[in-house]
Length: 131
Image 1 (tube, one colour):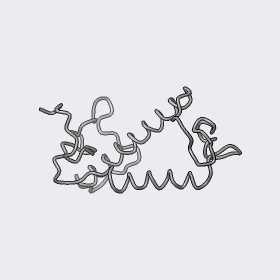
Image 2 (cartoon, helix red, strand yellow):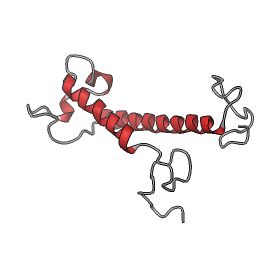
Image 3 (tube, one colour):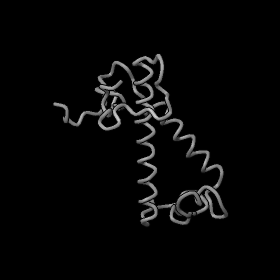
Image 4 (cartoon, helix red, strand yellow):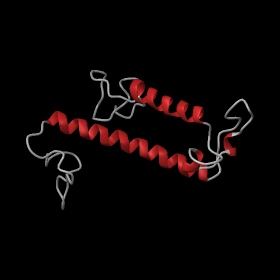
């Protein structure tokens, strides 16, 4: 895999955990790259969410029927754990929503014109950049 995208001097192909040592197929390499790209995008969104909410920007309106507004809950992990955290049912809804996105939308569908590993457009979104 020395000729793959991202393998460059001075390290070359960098595999610190040895996940691709031995007899490894191109399919295994592509799967690991797909997972790495997907997790990287999720981390970027999480970081952006931290920056935005700590900057004071919250969704308008109420988060529940009892009248609690989005900005009445603390930022970061304190929103999930602690005395002022969101209710457990709200946390379960967030996890279920992320699970639905993971299973239904954020996946690579073969045969839909994806140009590279991690291209989740699946033939639906075309901004005309590739023309």
